[in-house]
Image (cartoon, rainbow, N blue to C red):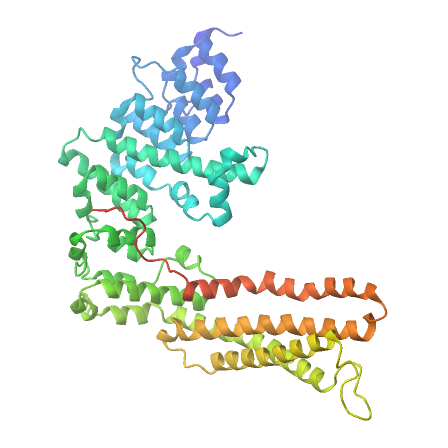
Amino acid sequence: MMPDESLALTDELGFNALHVAARTGNTAAAKILIHRLEDLLYMKSNYGFFPAHEAAKSAQRDTLLLLISHTKDDFEPNPCAGANGVSLLNAIIDADFFDIALHLVGKYPHTARIELPYGNSALKRIALKESAFLGVARFNFWERFISSTYFYLRAHSVPRIKVIHDKKMMHHQALELVKCLCKHMGSLNYTEAAPIYREAMITAARVGIHEVIEVIVEAFPAAIYNRHATTKHFIFHLAAQNRCEKVYNLIYQTSGHKHQYADAKDSSGNTLLHLAAGLAPPHKLNLVSGAALQMQRELQWFKEVEKFVHPYTKERPNYAGKTPKMVFTEEHKDLKIEGEKWMKDTANSCTIAAALIATVVFAAAITVPGGNESTTGYPIFLKSGAFVLFAVSDAVSLFTSTTSLLMFLSILTSRYAEEDFLYALPKRLCIGLFTLFVSILFMTIAFSATLYLVFGLNNRWVVMPVAALACLPISSFVLLQFPLLVDVISSTYGRGIFGKQSDNSFY
């Protein structure tokens, strides 16, 4: 009811009523305010932010769309143009509104060519969005299948399916935004474009977003030669240092130019192998379960990079006089101790279980169910099929539990050298866990067969509850220990994390 001009009143921070409505996502109030006083759209707070900036920073999608749709191109100052437009675009990217960002760049293409202080360009901002790119890369088999068949399933009401589709759509929009930004940067000369894409390349290499790097190099081939201004790291140095295998794998799609990285040094004299010898960042280590498997992954990185570098580089010291092997030993001494403790704790626990199973099934073998005939000494149920099942299952359980026990004992008595964590220890753990699982399975079958022989021959109803209860220990092992077995097998004998990602040439 107040005069329209009074709506422009601000608080001590310079925020007017539209700023507050934008920040809180009150779209209805924002419509009324714009209708009564359109000038509110173009008023800055004391911090230099327009209402549209506040909506983007607060991730208020509907209010942001309303404000942008009512912004006029020829009005000054314009929240969507110039440096104001870049800061707005960055805020929109931070909020994961990539479709709105695409619209804004299409309407104001010059925002792709402006770099704010501290290298804060839109291209660098999108290079920081790890979740938008790596979320899809970490889909398992079923999630990939669901995402590819979403439109055929039409299962919009299933929350999990919709989440998977939204992630895939976000990934597609983010990639399109990178291509759009590079396209609109095409009119810049090398001196103008290099500072923008250099920061984005370095950021993407550090975070691990290989797609951003591929798009930038396709648009600006000279970007492949970029180095960090201070540390003098190439993108592959950063990939090895930060354990970003997707970026490092681009080296397998690179032509003869890749050999320039084989002995390149950074500002501290570190080669690519020195950086691979350093300890991985904690968030990368935590992607692998167990300190022993983390140590294995670190050795895999070191061995993979060692295959690539020049033979002389393997022994070349850095400016501190340390060779790559010395750096690896020094950086991983604590992880090695933790890996040894983890492996011994696991072996100790499993040794007790294996020994107990071996004792039980051995005792069961010499005290057969039903007893023996007094004249011949043969088991009473010798001709029963259930007895044959008992005998075979008991024997298999005894042999596999004994094998498991020996494997875990060999782990406990191992010397625990660094190289042992690569194959020797994981291989023994694989065999030990697998044979332990088999021994539990067949012990359960043997026990179930015994119950049937003793109680079930004349009472068929006993079969169903016995079979149901027999599933409990098997299910418990599958739920609790089987994931560890899968991780160990995958990490030791799987296809690995290194290798060519596609047949397309990177550079």
